[in-house]
Image (cartoon, rainbow, N blue to C red; front, side, top):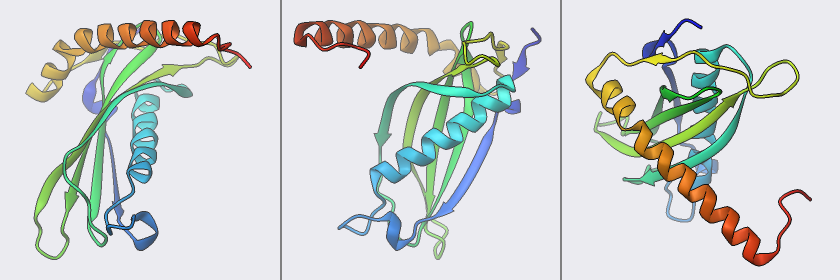
Length: 169
């Protein structure tokens, strides 16, 4: 399978923060931003593998600065590393005051998507080739995040076992 550059998956999505997107503090609902993150991440993953994908995990969403009503947000997603059937996607969100032009890094997130074949089963994905310094850094540090994901999954399974909760309902 031919490797693809990170830029082939790059996806950019902009949106204006409207009153219906905000909370009591007139800042953007975190859940609304999470929805945008999952969507832009899925598009980047699908661009990389040219297959349907499902969200396997959302490692983190780090909210760094609030986004106020009337500002815009620009989400940028890239496939930062790949496994056999999975892709780690990095999303960064920049907010902008459209009246002043002031911009701020608002949030970052790491997600994992799995590519699916025609039968809905996991299917191989192409390797990724990082090119920029940021892409290379994300690629080089991906193994550490992968190990943290595995540990978190083991911990969750142990917790579920202690509560006697069945995984499938």
